[in-house]
Image (cartoon, rainbow, N blue to C red):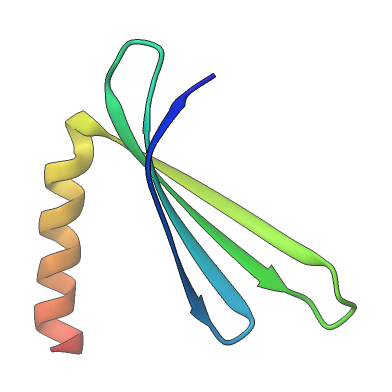
Length: 72
């Protein structure tokens, strides 16, 4: 089982985003982002993405560029 290092969540209307930093069996850290969306019938739909430590710098740079260009 992977060790949880950090957890947070952000609510946005019918969606909740979970940000979990975990340590894999090989001791490398990764970020797991989960989107949970409440459907009209009361059920929940979940989608996950895992970003591994070796990809984090590229992910961060891309997100910052998008934010600065379109959302700042």
